Length: 302
Image 1 (tube, rainbow, N blue to C red):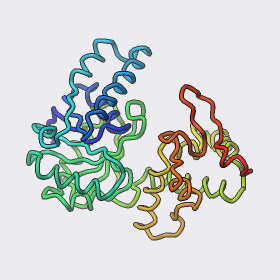
Image 2 (image 1 turned 180 degrees about the vertical axis):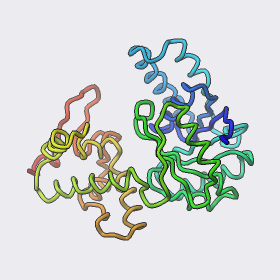
Image 3 (image 1 turned 60 degrees about the vertical axis):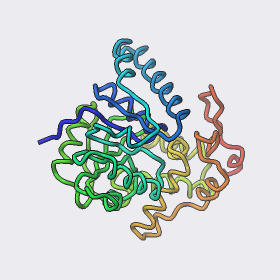
Protein backbone atom coordinates (compact mmCIF):
# COMPACT_ATOMS: atom_id res chain seq x y z
CA UNK A 1 0.00 0.00 0.00
CA UNK A 2 1.36 3.43 -0.96
CA UNK A 3 2.14 6.00 1.69
CA UNK A 4 0.10 9.21 1.41
CA UNK A 5 2.37 12.22 0.81
CA UNK A 6 1.15 15.82 0.70
CA UNK A 7 4.31 17.87 1.31
CA UNK A 8 7.64 17.37 -0.43
CA UNK A 9 10.95 19.04 0.42
CA UNK A 10 13.58 19.41 -2.32
CA UNK A 11 17.17 20.02 -1.23
CA UNK A 12 18.95 22.13 -3.84
CA UNK A 13 17.59 24.83 -6.16
CA UNK A 14 19.79 24.34 -9.21
CA UNK A 15 18.66 23.06 -12.60
CA UNK A 16 17.48 19.69 -11.29
CA UNK A 17 16.19 20.98 -7.97
CA UNK A 18 13.98 23.72 -9.38
CA UNK A 19 12.73 21.35 -12.08
CA UNK A 20 11.71 18.79 -9.46
CA UNK A 21 9.96 21.52 -7.45
CA UNK A 22 8.17 22.60 -10.63
CA UNK A 23 6.66 19.18 -11.38
CA UNK A 24 5.63 18.46 -7.78
CA UNK A 25 3.97 21.89 -7.38
CA UNK A 26 2.22 21.55 -10.73
CA UNK A 27 0.89 18.15 -9.62
CA UNK A 28 -0.74 19.60 -6.50
CA UNK A 29 1.88 18.96 -3.82
CA UNK A 30 3.00 21.49 -1.24
CA UNK A 31 6.68 22.03 -1.96
CA UNK A 32 9.49 23.26 0.29
CA UNK A 33 12.55 24.28 -1.75
CA UNK A 34 15.69 24.45 0.40
CA UNK A 35 19.08 25.95 -0.43
CA UNK A 36 21.73 27.55 1.77
CA UNK A 37 21.75 30.58 -0.55
CA UNK A 38 18.68 32.83 -0.69
CA UNK A 39 19.88 34.36 -3.94
CA UNK A 40 19.90 30.90 -5.53
CA UNK A 41 16.35 30.31 -4.28
CA UNK A 42 15.17 33.61 -5.76
CA UNK A 43 16.80 32.75 -9.09
CA UNK A 44 15.16 29.30 -9.01
CA UNK A 45 11.71 30.78 -8.44
CA UNK A 46 12.29 33.04 -11.44
CA UNK A 47 13.28 30.04 -13.55
CA UNK A 48 10.20 28.07 -12.48
CA UNK A 49 7.99 31.06 -13.36
CA UNK A 50 9.57 31.42 -16.82
CA UNK A 51 9.25 27.70 -17.53
CA UNK A 52 5.60 27.75 -16.51
CA UNK A 53 5.04 30.84 -18.69
CA UNK A 54 6.22 28.75 -21.66
CA UNK A 55 3.69 26.07 -20.72
CA UNK A 56 0.94 28.72 -20.59
CA UNK A 57 1.97 30.04 -24.02
CA UNK A 58 1.80 26.50 -25.45
CA UNK A 59 -1.61 25.90 -23.85
CA UNK A 60 -0.30 23.08 -21.63
CA UNK A 61 -1.52 24.83 -18.47
CA UNK A 62 -3.64 27.89 -17.75
CA UNK A 63 -2.45 31.11 -16.10
CA UNK A 64 -4.54 30.11 -13.07
CA UNK A 65 -2.79 26.72 -12.95
CA UNK A 66 0.56 28.50 -12.99
CA UNK A 67 -0.34 30.88 -10.19
CA UNK A 68 -1.68 28.07 -8.02
CA UNK A 69 1.46 25.98 -8.59
CA UNK A 70 3.80 28.88 -7.78
CA UNK A 71 1.74 29.51 -4.64
CA UNK A 72 2.42 25.96 -3.43
CA UNK A 73 6.20 26.53 -3.30
CA UNK A 74 7.87 27.93 -0.19
CA UNK A 75 11.60 28.60 0.08
CA UNK A 76 13.88 27.87 3.04
CA UNK A 77 17.55 28.31 3.92
CA UNK A 78 17.30 26.25 7.13
CA UNK A 79 17.10 22.48 6.67
CA UNK A 80 15.31 21.72 9.94
CA UNK A 81 12.56 24.19 9.03
CA UNK A 82 12.39 23.01 5.43
CA UNK A 83 11.69 19.36 6.24
CA UNK A 84 9.02 19.93 8.90
CA UNK A 85 5.87 17.98 8.01
CA UNK A 86 7.32 16.51 4.80
CA UNK A 87 6.49 12.95 3.83
CA UNK A 88 9.24 12.90 1.21
CA UNK A 89 12.56 14.68 0.83
CA UNK A 90 14.30 14.66 -2.56
CA UNK A 91 17.98 15.57 -2.44
CA UNK A 92 19.13 17.28 -5.64
CA UNK A 93 22.54 18.64 -4.64
CA UNK A 94 25.77 18.50 -6.66
CA UNK A 95 26.96 15.00 -7.64
CA UNK A 96 29.53 14.82 -4.82
CA UNK A 97 29.46 11.84 -2.48
CA UNK A 98 30.78 13.61 0.62
CA UNK A 99 28.24 16.39 0.22
CA UNK A 100 25.38 13.94 -0.26
CA UNK A 101 26.36 11.80 2.74
CA UNK A 102 26.51 14.91 4.91
CA UNK A 103 23.06 16.01 3.72
CA UNK A 104 21.54 12.59 4.46
CA UNK A 105 23.03 12.55 7.97
CA UNK A 106 21.28 15.87 8.60
CA UNK A 107 18.03 14.74 6.99
CA UNK A 108 17.97 11.62 9.16
CA UNK A 109 18.32 13.83 12.21
CA UNK A 110 15.67 16.41 11.30
CA UNK A 111 13.00 14.50 9.32
CA UNK A 112 9.95 12.77 10.78
CA UNK A 113 10.44 9.05 11.42
CA UNK A 114 8.11 8.02 8.56
CA UNK A 115 9.60 10.43 6.02
CA UNK A 116 11.05 8.84 2.86
CA UNK A 117 14.52 10.10 1.88
CA UNK A 118 15.21 10.07 -1.87
CA UNK A 119 18.29 11.08 -3.84
CA UNK A 120 18.31 12.39 -7.39
CA UNK A 121 21.85 11.03 -7.76
CA UNK A 122 22.72 9.81 -11.24
CA UNK A 123 25.43 7.37 -10.14
CA UNK A 124 26.23 7.29 -6.40
CA UNK A 125 25.27 4.14 -4.49
CA UNK A 126 21.89 4.38 -2.75
CA UNK A 127 23.04 1.66 -0.35
CA UNK A 128 26.04 3.79 0.65
CA UNK A 129 23.86 6.87 1.09
CA UNK A 130 21.38 4.85 3.18
CA UNK A 131 24.17 3.51 5.40
CA UNK A 132 24.71 6.91 7.07
CA UNK A 133 21.06 7.03 8.21
CA UNK A 134 19.10 5.14 10.86
CA UNK A 135 16.37 4.38 8.28
CA UNK A 136 18.00 2.54 5.33
CA UNK A 137 14.64 0.96 4.45
CA UNK A 138 13.26 4.43 3.71
CA UNK A 139 16.11 5.56 1.44
CA UNK A 140 15.68 5.27 -2.34
CA UNK A 141 16.94 6.76 -5.60
CA UNK A 142 14.58 8.98 -7.58
CA UNK A 143 16.59 9.94 -10.66
CA UNK A 144 14.80 12.57 -12.75
CA UNK A 145 16.03 13.51 -16.23
CA UNK A 146 16.94 17.01 -17.39
CA UNK A 147 14.89 19.09 -18.19
CA UNK A 148 12.62 17.71 -15.48
CA UNK A 149 9.32 19.33 -16.59
CA UNK A 150 9.75 17.85 -20.09
CA UNK A 151 11.43 14.46 -19.69
CA UNK A 152 9.06 11.60 -18.84
CA UNK A 153 11.45 9.12 -17.22
CA UNK A 154 12.07 8.65 -13.51
CA UNK A 155 14.69 5.98 -12.82
CA UNK A 156 13.87 4.51 -9.40
CA UNK A 157 16.82 2.84 -7.68
CA UNK A 158 16.34 0.38 -4.85
CA UNK A 159 19.16 0.22 -2.32
CA UNK A 160 20.07 -3.08 -0.69
CA UNK A 161 17.72 -2.36 2.24
CA UNK A 162 14.97 -0.30 0.56
CA UNK A 163 11.53 -1.46 1.74
CA UNK A 164 9.15 -2.76 -0.94
CA UNK A 165 6.44 -0.40 0.36
CA UNK A 166 8.76 2.58 -0.16
CA UNK A 167 9.47 1.45 -3.73
CA UNK A 168 5.74 1.21 -4.43
CA UNK A 169 5.10 4.66 -2.93
CA UNK A 170 7.76 6.28 -5.11
CA UNK A 171 6.60 4.35 -8.19
CA UNK A 172 2.98 5.49 -7.69
CA UNK A 173 4.13 9.04 -6.90
CA UNK A 174 6.08 9.19 -10.17
CA UNK A 175 2.96 8.16 -12.08
CA UNK A 176 1.03 10.88 -10.24
CA UNK A 177 3.60 13.39 -11.54
CA UNK A 178 2.84 12.28 -15.09
CA UNK A 179 6.17 10.46 -15.38
CA UNK A 180 7.05 6.94 -16.49
CA UNK A 181 8.89 5.18 -13.64
CA UNK A 182 11.38 2.38 -14.32
CA UNK A 183 12.95 0.30 -11.54
CA UNK A 184 16.67 -0.42 -11.31
CA UNK A 185 18.92 -2.02 -8.71
CA UNK A 186 21.86 -0.39 -6.99
CA UNK A 187 24.88 -0.94 -9.23
CA UNK A 188 27.31 1.77 -10.39
CA UNK A 189 25.60 4.10 -12.86
CA UNK A 190 22.29 2.21 -12.51
CA UNK A 191 20.88 1.77 -16.05
CA UNK A 192 20.77 5.22 -17.65
CA UNK A 193 24.34 6.29 -17.03
CA UNK A 194 25.90 2.85 -17.20
CA UNK A 195 24.86 2.84 -20.87
CA UNK A 196 24.97 6.57 -21.68
CA UNK A 197 28.31 7.58 -20.17
CA UNK A 198 30.47 5.00 -21.97
CA UNK A 199 28.89 6.21 -25.24
CA UNK A 200 29.73 9.84 -24.43
CA UNK A 201 33.23 8.81 -23.31
CA UNK A 202 33.78 6.86 -26.55
CA UNK A 203 32.67 9.90 -28.56
CA UNK A 204 35.26 11.99 -26.70
CA UNK A 205 37.97 9.36 -27.35
CA UNK A 206 36.93 9.31 -31.02
CA UNK A 207 37.49 13.09 -31.11
CA UNK A 208 40.70 12.84 -29.08
CA UNK A 209 42.17 10.32 -31.56
CA UNK A 210 41.27 12.48 -34.55
CA UNK A 211 38.82 10.05 -36.12
CA UNK A 212 36.44 12.94 -36.81
CA UNK A 213 35.66 16.46 -35.62
CA UNK A 214 33.10 17.61 -33.06
CA UNK A 215 30.35 18.49 -35.55
CA UNK A 216 30.94 15.36 -37.60
CA UNK A 217 30.68 13.02 -34.60
CA UNK A 218 27.46 14.64 -33.41
CA UNK A 219 25.93 14.76 -36.90
CA UNK A 220 26.68 11.07 -37.53
CA UNK A 221 24.99 10.08 -34.26
CA UNK A 222 22.00 12.35 -34.83
CA UNK A 223 21.32 11.43 -38.44
CA UNK A 224 22.62 7.87 -38.39
CA UNK A 225 21.26 6.72 -35.03
CA UNK A 226 18.24 9.06 -34.71
CA UNK A 227 19.57 10.63 -31.51
CA UNK A 228 17.91 14.01 -30.85
CA UNK A 229 21.25 15.44 -29.68
CA UNK A 230 24.80 14.36 -30.48
CA UNK A 231 26.87 12.83 -27.64
CA UNK A 232 29.29 15.77 -27.40
CA UNK A 233 26.51 18.35 -27.31
CA UNK A 234 24.72 16.19 -24.75
CA UNK A 235 27.89 16.07 -22.62
CA UNK A 236 27.99 19.88 -22.69
CA UNK A 237 24.33 19.97 -21.65
CA UNK A 238 24.85 17.54 -18.76
CA UNK A 239 28.08 19.26 -17.67
CA UNK A 240 31.51 17.82 -18.39
CA UNK A 241 32.32 17.83 -14.67
CA UNK A 242 29.22 15.72 -14.01
CA UNK A 243 30.16 13.34 -16.83
CA UNK A 244 33.65 12.96 -15.36
CA UNK A 245 32.25 12.34 -11.89
CA UNK A 246 29.90 9.61 -13.14
CA UNK A 247 32.63 7.93 -15.20
CA UNK A 248 34.88 7.89 -12.12
CA UNK A 249 32.09 6.20 -10.15
CA UNK A 250 31.71 3.61 -12.92
CA UNK A 251 35.45 3.06 -13.25
CA UNK A 252 36.04 2.74 -9.50
CA UNK A 253 32.86 0.76 -8.82
CA UNK A 254 33.08 -1.77 -11.64
CA UNK A 255 36.85 -1.83 -12.05
CA UNK A 256 36.79 -2.33 -15.80
CA UNK A 257 39.27 -0.09 -17.71
CA UNK A 258 36.66 0.50 -20.43
CA UNK A 259 35.03 3.02 -18.06
CA UNK A 260 38.23 5.09 -17.60
CA UNK A 261 37.50 8.75 -18.50
CA UNK A 262 39.03 10.09 -21.69
CA UNK A 263 42.14 12.22 -21.14
CA UNK A 264 40.55 15.02 -23.17
CA UNK A 265 37.55 15.05 -20.83
CA UNK A 266 39.78 15.22 -17.75
CA UNK A 267 41.80 18.08 -19.28
CA UNK A 268 38.71 20.07 -20.27
CA UNK A 269 37.26 19.80 -16.76
CA UNK A 270 40.58 20.85 -15.20
CA UNK A 271 40.63 23.84 -17.56
CA UNK A 272 37.11 24.84 -16.46
CA UNK A 273 35.52 24.09 -19.85
CA UNK A 274 32.39 22.45 -18.44
CA UNK A 275 29.87 22.93 -21.24
CA UNK A 276 26.79 25.13 -21.20
CA UNK A 277 27.20 25.99 -17.51
CA UNK A 278 30.59 27.66 -18.15
CA UNK A 279 29.78 28.95 -21.64
CA UNK A 280 32.17 26.62 -23.43
CA UNK A 281 32.80 22.90 -23.75
CA UNK A 282 32.87 21.08 -27.06
CA UNK A 283 30.86 24.03 -28.34
CA UNK A 284 30.93 27.72 -27.46
CA UNK A 285 27.65 29.11 -26.12
CA UNK A 286 26.59 32.72 -26.68
CA UNK A 287 23.52 34.00 -24.78
CA UNK A 288 20.55 34.35 -27.13
CA UNK A 289 22.12 32.32 -29.92
CA UNK A 290 20.86 28.86 -30.90
CA UNK A 291 23.70 28.22 -33.36
CA UNK A 292 26.17 25.47 -32.46
CA UNK A 293 29.72 26.81 -32.81
CA UNK A 294 32.55 24.35 -32.19
CA UNK A 295 35.02 25.53 -29.53
CA UNK A 296 38.07 27.15 -31.14
CA UNK A 297 40.30 24.95 -28.97
CA UNK A 298 38.87 21.85 -30.64
CA UNK A 299 38.27 23.11 -34.19
CA UNK A 300 41.70 21.85 -35.30
CA UNK A 301 40.75 18.23 -34.59
CA UNK A 302 39.41 16.72 -37.81
